[in-house]
Image (cartoon, rainbow, N blue to C red):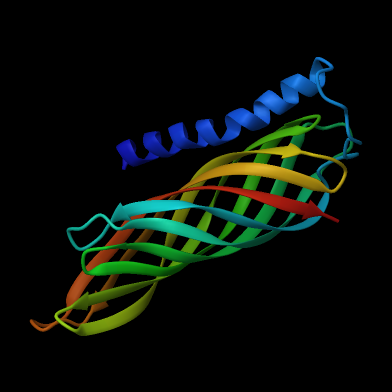
Length: 201
């Protein structure tokens, strides 16, 4: 778990580097300044795409993911602290060996620190997903529930649009799948690194 989290945070840093560079360029006059958002308050919707990897049934499934997110932020006037709640749903191509993840979703709280265009945040909450186990032609799927923790960074492009990078560690616990030799208890835990855009209302 520790190795996966460190690898995920390293990937998040790589994804966030262009965002930081854009912020520094704008600060030093190398790029035009678009209108700043008055705050991070309000509802938003967006889309994301990324990569997931993990372990299940003795294998290491991995693959692309992508989907949608929606949430709400609250920032008190004059405060750099941003509180929020977010839900997302990703279609998943994470697969390997006998196990695959068909979809993955979360419902999370967020708390972050805002500095003008830049927001960094920690996040955690409920995770759910559908796993599929297939051996010698016998295939069955189960929906599992667990938890997730992660962190991210978001950059306001203008008053409404923002871009972000995010890392999540996901543990879906164990579910019982059918097999030719009887019921099999299989758990999935893994990591997700993804980038996305949001439109704030």
